[in-house]
Length: 246
Length: 246
DNA sequence: GTCCTATACTCCTCTAGAGGACTAGCTGAC
DNA sequence: GTCAGCTAGTCCTCTAGAGGAGTATAGGAC
Image (cartoon, rainbow over the protein chains, first blue to last red):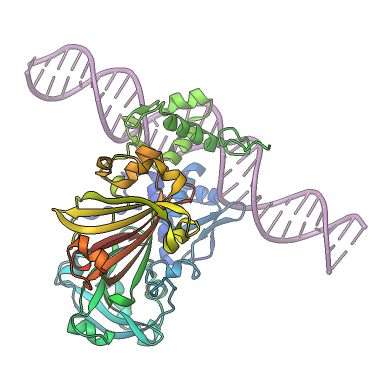
């Protein structure tokens, strides 16, 4: 089997690219933790035996990717997915009229099974490849608002199969980060409309055939790899979705 | 009167910032036209009397902003608002299943009238302030897909009241740009579902009470000023909306 | 205790240059 | 005519440095 060239050592790549991967690995490994300052540019340049400008270019790339954060005069820091803003970055639902919601959530089911067509296509897997399936109900004021089916590719999300269900009593993306060190950087949503099937209607406490909104999301990591696919259903009348396009 | 510091000459700004503005001006002025190659980096650096790296940093900024485009070995080019990508940047509708649509459109009505509550709030006007109202039907394969009501603040969009209706036979944002020199840089959409009223159902050729999607959009210029507000209705079953979140 | 200042540290800007990678077009051998 | 190879032009990578700007802290003057 041909060995896949490692981005960190592949000599065909420019030095700053390889540096970028080397630095990213230190963050991934936990050698540098969120909130920490990393060594000074000049020290890193000396350590890796490159010129300052080259090291700056590597760091710049990670800043753009959102992994690092520079503060002039203070240092360069590993960015924490700060809980004020970005925590709700991917949570686009709002109540009718646009009030932000403070939902609670409940894990309804958790099992391992084949990905199936839609999830496989989004995650770059074969339909029969195993994934971890989560089913989760989101409620507002104890009223069911959204039912999610979530597919997570499997060697990588294995730990989540055994995490106590009580730990799911929070947003999922911070959970991925805490338990697996997996960060969601980007996502695509597709919003459409359908009629509720029985399987969807029951947990939402609506009637079969009632209008529902369907949101299909694929979420990606910093490196562009698809990490999560989900399909969400909610009663159409109570639904509102906000986006900013730039 | 205090003179506003010109970004091109304000000495407090770094050189590369001032260069960026100087280059952008040449594009704005039409000295360099879309599709043209601009002079080589080394020539520009010599012309402005700066080091190559400084000029590269200035150009890099314009590339990120989307004004320039580099092609290794060939040159640096003024980017044309290519009809493939950016033209449809704000066009998020897709056919069921995600196929991109090639819609035609027809101007149904054009009149001047008070903004009303919703449009006024979005545009920062008083409800009785006059705006130009457009009503426009978008069709795919001669089938009505979306009916739009569009509010445009009035001294600014005055020219659009007299533009021949035939000119509306294209996308609106390029029309704003061509006729008024007004560029849309950013927008927010809010998506919700409702039942069709008679006024909406008739042009869409659906029944009153049928489920429809409602998209409310506010569009902004480069300076953050709201320029357009619109409310769109479409038959829910045929609707799909794609977003990328980052 | 409070305030100022010196200092040491960080990232930021800018210079000057060498060599590599990529592209396009010309030239000459066939 | 075709095609390989040469060449000049472009952007890209990388080096080695100097000085500036912003931040935090320790010491000393009051």
